[in-house]
Amino acid sequence: MIQRTEIRELADFESAQGCAITFCYQPGTPQNQSHREEAILVKDLVRGALREIEKSGRNRCARADLDRILGLAEQLHGNSGKAKVIFAESSRNFWREYNLPPWLDGTRLHINRRFHLKALAPLLQYRPRVCVCAIDRTKARLFDYQNEQCKEVIGFFNELPRTPEIEGLGRYETGHVGRHLSELAKHHYKQVADTILKFFERRGCENLAVGIRDESWAVFESVLHPYLKKNLVGRFATDPTVDAQQIKIKVDRLLSEQNSTRRQELVRDVVGEAQRKGRGAAGLRHVLRSLEQGEVQVLLLGERFHAAGVICRHCGHIDFKAQANCAVCAHPVTAVEDLADPILGSALRSGIEVVYVQDDPVLEASGHIAALLRFRADQNKAAQQAS
Image (cartoon, rainbow, N blue to C red):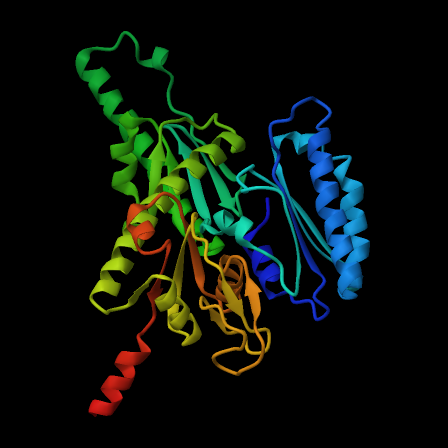
């Protein structure tokens, strides 16, 4: 799976010769098992691109990559149901190939100065580093979840007296032994909780997830440090016999729920701020202005956002108005079918957090795009003039 750091690298990439190729393959439902229609579609796209570069006399550096993609067409065979995205630029020996979930809107081929990154927007949801503890009364295992990978790092085992050793005792003795066992278990929980806190400090974790039976949670929670409780992303019912892959599935689910809640809250906060003329911008015109003025902290991009416009290759100005020359530097502009790609690329290059939002009626009503602002330049100017 592609990492966020790699997406930022792709956003920074620029081909001076305009030979950056983005190839997106979306598997379809084949009419037969040979997948011949998919291969034909890819070949048609590549051959069409080859004809275009021959006509224009430009982008000849793209030929080697196009030939390579053409060679892959016969080998795709549905790609095991996965989408494939390729980013290439042969003059700089650049080739990146990724298999993704099949969520693309179709098979596409683009040749430009920059890569088209809209297909990767769903991958931009933040995945924090999580310490995961699977624990019961005698055993515990700690896992490190990072970059969507999960591995075990620490294991505990504390022996408690077995049940047969206390059979045959009277009520008082049994109660006494039971309390003793509870104290031993609580000591075990405390030992594990202290280790988790040290692990947080040493490894730079951001969240804690706990796998534990419901009946044991109250005792374990009582010994957790307040800092760990504050950063608890959630818990799930399991025991220490669980393996790393099962842990990953559980944590993925917890983080998806957390991200979904955060997205909903963020959209409503941003739109509310925009309506109050506070730290929010809603709609394409306002977001473009805020991006250009360096105000944006978080960009909210809806899955159905699509808008044609123009981009100035000289100064980078993005505009939704059809015009021949840049409104900023007067240089000729290039028509863009979908502004999502230049907006997304500009945001990533500026270090702006991008949040991809699916099926949110509030964001849809705002044109499928909004932004949380660090400040409002117009209010700062007004304050300066008033002083």
